[in-house]
Image 1 (cartoon, protein in one colour):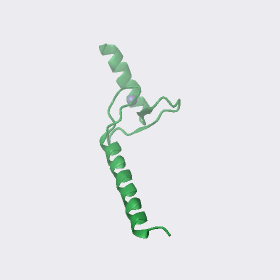
Image 2 (cartoon, protein in one colour; image 1 turned 60 degrees about the horizontal axis):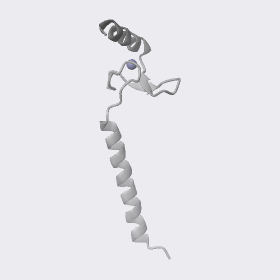
Image 3 (tube, helix red, strand yellow; image 1 turned 60 degrees about the vertical axis):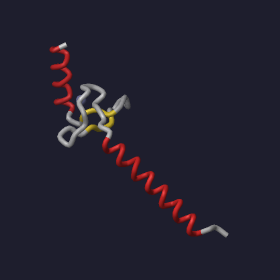
Image 4 (cartoon, protein in one colour; image 1 turned 90 degrees about the vertical axis):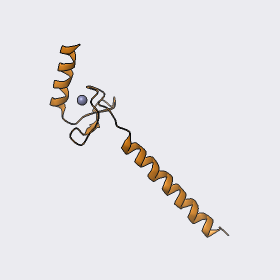
Length: 73
Ligand SMILES: [Zn+2]
């Protein structure tokens, strides 16, 4: 017969680890693969349609930033 107490604590531990990973992911800022801007509440990132990575949801602002970066470089 399975030890219920052990089973329960193992499940609790797995839950804790999952929550920890989620918190870490929230803290680690992603950057847009196109303009390299950090993700923020003002600039949410979404998956790029070509699957190359996270990119700005605001495509126009992203394009403008890229153009500015090119002009400066
Ligand atoms: Zn961008």
